[in-house]
Image 1 (cartoon, rainbow, N blue to C red):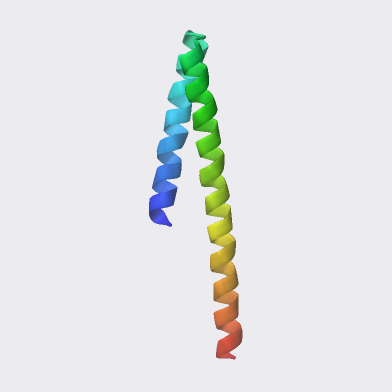
Image 2: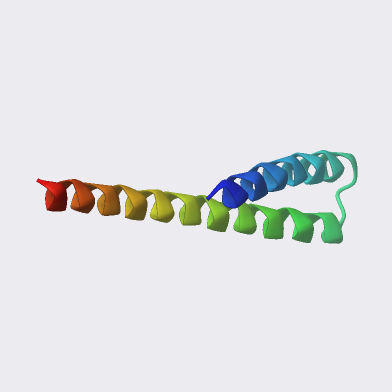
Length: 67
């Protein structure tokens, strides 16, 4: 989970760099990089949300089993 958060932060920085490059030069390759970065950013976000929900469900189940 910690590795996913680090990866998320790194890709957020990459997204910022790509956005700056896109604002300076409006080329097709930078546009493609921007789209791929946003898609990956969304995938990592979805992964973090799903893993958090899974962890919460597991902890609730453990609490129920311990009672």
